[in-house]
Amino acid sequence: MTERLNFFWITFKKYVILSFGSLVAALGLEAFLVPNRIIDGGVVGISIIASYLSHLPLGIFIFVLNLPFLCIGYNHIGKTFVFSTLFSVTSLSFWVTVLHLHTPVTQDLLLASVFGGIVLGAGIGIIIRHGGSLDGTEVVAIILDKKTGFSVGEIVMFFNVFIISSAGFVFGWDRAMYSLLAYYITFNVIDLTIEGLDESKSVFIVSDKPAEIAEVIIARLGRGVTFLEGKGGYSGEPKNVLYSVITRLEIAKLKAIVKEIDQNAFVTISHVHEIYGGRFKKKAIH
Image (cartoon, rainbow, N blue to C red):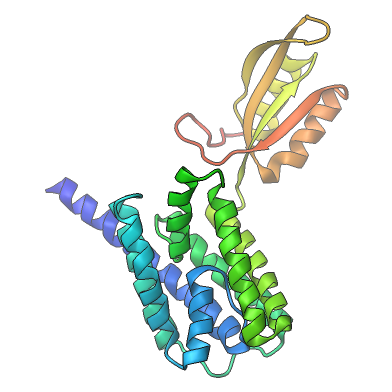
């Protein structure tokens, strides 16, 4: 019984968050982008153009145009993802209908593009972070990725370049360029929302003073350090390589630590997409 209640609560919480993300995305569309005839990429962009040309509600097109993509993805991607996406799309359709505004928050196209992109990107990021999506073209991209030599990102980019270019013929080329700006901002805010300010970075440090550097990293940053055994390609001498995971906010401090101890150290910093297990949380620094 307890397990069922726990599962119900987790599921309920997930769909509440998906609905909230849809509300935030709808605010970005209706308060900034749509009234200024600035579009987003994907199905939402096609829906904005179709709504403008037909004078029918935007919510109808967002819902109807996404359905074929979700039907295609039902047997290829996973039922949980499809149901989460269907719920998110339905919520977005509802919210854009409820919030439909004839007068935008601002009529300055640059401000509308920037703030519309920020708010829309935050909403989409919330949804993606909790297992949903608002764009059926991503479903097709995932399927085509398995059958072609193109990545999901490349396929989605192709769709969006075509869709945003179409806005030039409908709304004018100035609106198409503002749409491209809004799309770029949305794309980056989605990443920021998903990964957060604590985006993780993996660090490899090759130094002749590994113990000293490790000690200071643990003391000042509170991060764990792993020693790896390596060998110099030119000298053939054994080398100690330090490996650690930090947040991007700690990068500058780590560089200063390494430079302070060994100016000849070799450091590489890479993006980490996901961390699972282990003890990544900071240890208490006394």
